[in-house]
Length: 399
Image 1 (spheres, rainbow, N blue to C red):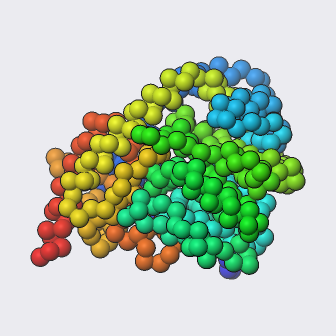
Image 2: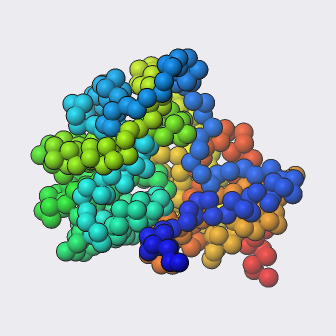
Image 3: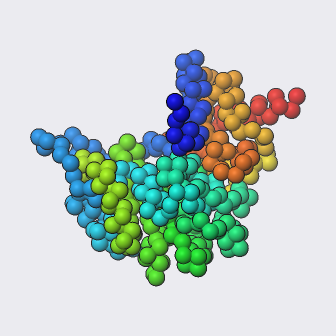
């Protein structure tokens, strides 16, 4: 019996690909510092946990397909604080940001249509595209320029007869790049010219550093019919297991179509929406403190990376990732070696090889994504192990 084409073609997660080596390292008695996955160690807000502890309904019933009214009204208030003015019917709550992206792809593109996405990109976009029977068209960006968007001519070169949308992640995963308003304005003008949707993944909007300012795709007047925002609470409230996201658009016909997909899967999780709603009204200090903490972690990792000869890495301005080009040929081989053959005092480290974040064959082979999601003490240890391991690895390869 044959499996469906999508079942054969869907990509296994490159972020989790090397987990068997980490599991074996732990069985061998090693401590592994996980910098390979975006799971923050910041505590989930007490206000959110309190909702779970105190839920007392006798029946956990179906909710509305578009999400609970109380939570969607809460989201209206949240987005108003982000200078995004919405009505409840312009928001549909989803089972995490993942479902929001899948829904967005399914409503804007037919089978085998194309969505342009700057690479390196969040690797699960590959899986979402396969589920939606859509093809991703990569637009290569480079470590040397801080993964900035290319010139307009290069973007337009990627547009073909089957192109339906441009997908952006801002701030970026895996790069930490924050697109300026001017860069986004270029994308908006190109999308207008070629009648394309722009899908904007803004999960990390709160986490911008230095003098960077986050600009939403919803901030552009006259682009309402083509702008689609997808979002998630996973990183904002350190609640990756809650699986609550949303899709936002002022395009009435598009949202009516999304609602039909939402009805087909019945409803998003009820308790998790109530828990997420409790976080909307947290004091501003909550986000400010987290932003400060992540910026310190970013600085620590970036400064350690700069100590490596021939490293290529521009300081990222957002999210909690750094994508770095190293003076090695094969980042995956280096990671496997770290987990199998190297440790300091019984401790080693794991990051994510970046090749899996590219769609163009051969790109990213000598790059890694580092997620700075550990406290400063553990992060400092991990980076010292990383640098010592790289020195040893390079000396062995030189023989």
